[in-house]
Length: 338
Image (cartoon, rainbow, N blue to C red; front, side, top):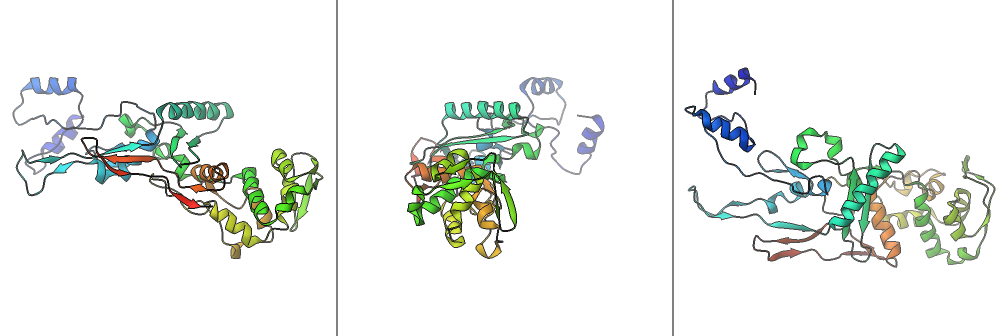
């Protein structure tokens, strides 16, 4: 610490000032050996994250005063923080320890997901990435991974953007993955569509726009449209689908609203109401355009398909437990219905 900065603090009209906090043991020992009158050391507790970067985007971190600043540390600050007992002000006042928050995260799955998303980001030349693993029957999240990673033990070395939990906070256009949701809407109202065939010439003109395919796919059934990710095929199919039905299906799959997962900063994405659609919107939405979604929304939506149409609310919390391990609150699977 520069000498002028030390003098500036000492000249303040206060009986007590901090010169430095969170010293390592070696520095503290050297200061104590100086024996300077009026210079004292104070022992403070602080958070240590033994797993380093593992699941740091979920756990978050606590700041200088052990106040939660990101992640579960921030979301459940009131639960995790201990406090003095009631009506006691003396130094030896009873102390009520904070509770523990048990996560649904599987360390092995989380570690594997983090390594794989890092590999994918590096190989593709991307700047960031996210991966989510969920039990479709319960909504329990086994991994919510991101890259780049942040070490909460030295959080001050990272930018605000690096600390973001991309899977929950950032939204994007899902593209052709949304063809599956459009197909689900079709099957619900027009089950006979499974027996129809749709001709792909490599492009299609609709609502004064030309939308291209990656190839000339020829005649395709609905499952072939999904298999080959055929834009022309799905657009022909959704012509028989009312705009209100497509919107309702997208909404029921959780798009345009928060999932309710217990992580701060969740984005609802963007799903405009039917009144704001253009003549092209129905077809754009069927190929994942004119909509923005989060990774957590996509996992929950496709989880509903894998779960027989039942949408389970994603959860990252297993339970809240007292200091002696007693379960104070258990988080049970919650369904939004079909």
